[in-house]
Image 1 (cartoon, rainbow over the protein chains, first blue to last red):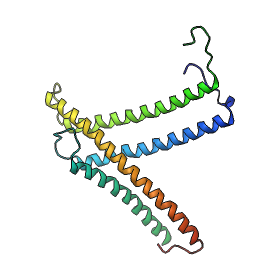
Image 2 (tube, rainbow over the protein chains, first blue to last red):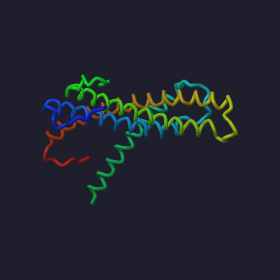
Image 3 (cartoon, one colour):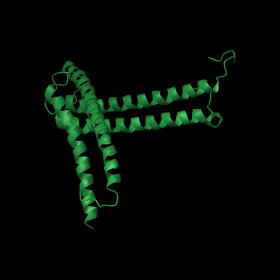
Length: 89
Length: 108
């Protein structure tokens, strides 16, 4: 951009639209961040042998899915246990 | 493009330009991270003992690894997205249930 945008000169509707777009981009970015992290840890668990094809085979695909699902389960299990720990105090 | 000073951008155009820039930068950021992860994992996988140059075998491995990583990322993304949506749905249902049971301490 060769010219600075003066945000204060925007109309209320434009400001609202920009805020909405920024919020949704930030959300998207957070989700993508988690996907990068998940791909990172699940790749280590699922791709252990030598790579002989560029395609994801059935076992690897299933492993990736299970890995994501169990990671989510772990998340919830930890939260749930934390809750019981707090309740026990 | 304002070589002849004729197109001082209207605020509306500036807004569109800003939105485009934000979205482009977000996409770039995502791509950059993906590339960095591909580099990290495929280097670890394909080049266990770095020699004086990449063999053609190394290069084949790198290409295949890269394609595989991208497919892997897509599966991860899809699975996570579906799970996230279903959890959100569950949570929305729970909110209603929690509101109905308001005042009674949860036994769970």
